[in-house]
Image (cartoon, rainbow, N blue to C red; front, side, top):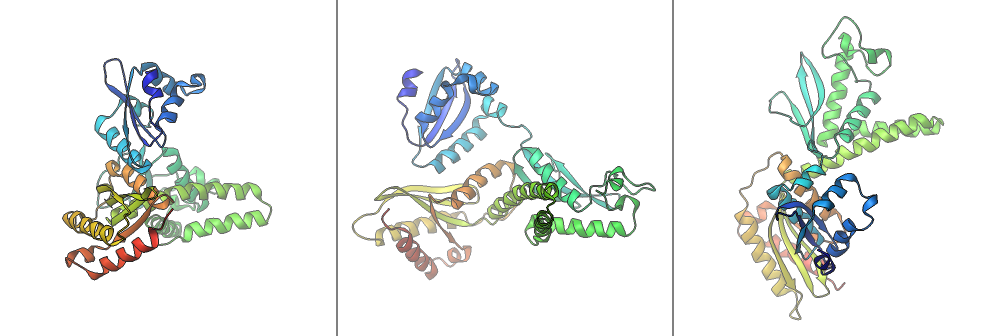
Length: 362
């Protein structure tokens, strides 16, 4: 083991840790394989209990080198899904995929947080959110408390719920006009999550600002915490919405001054990857090669239809979305209509601009 760790490269890649029987018990990734694997065996006392248990069972090690950190992330994700290593499951919350469901209960819509959303025409579902369930709960509770829709009754009643006396419920538990106001707020909450109206979020920001101006720092801190929690689920909805668009994406990043790594991506899948050299003959050969790949890869996959992102897709979708937001790569979207005509002139124009503006010496 010591020799294997010492000989590990400092490049990006994935490591597979094995037990005494040769079974893979953990899969990880790193931008620097050697540094990351070594960290498991140094300062062991400071590691969490689960990591200590893992290290105690490691008897062998395998690694796979990738050209980029992005590929290491994607490979790790695929291997975990395929192999389901014991310690990857132990170190990840088994209920890690959380959904927000808005359902009708005895004529009144209710917000529910669940790990199993089910299927119903009466339900509006947002997610999956890949994080601690508490993060999603804090965001929903923030909205409920901020707009006084945190009713604890499951249906209308002749008596008010406890939260009504605490000022956290409008009184929809009693029926009447409060129910209409509750429904208006819930419609705005749905609009916030689907991206059509950020009014609720902006009002929360305004309330935080007003509380700070009045030196009510306790209230301002409360609104700040609400906003941070809501930011989390809004960012996740951006990932989900982006993925559901099923865009055709051309991506590259530099490996060296004269070499790039090209990726063709759709939804949560890398359709093609290839190293390309920036040769002395100019951009024409590179332009022709990338165009050929676009026409063959994306057109072959053009039947993929938009649908809700599943929990099986969300981890890879998050990796791709984050990669595009980073500074390591350059990307170009290819609209579906450009592919339908066979040889749309806008492909050449877009590629020409993309390559000439982006592929400058580093």
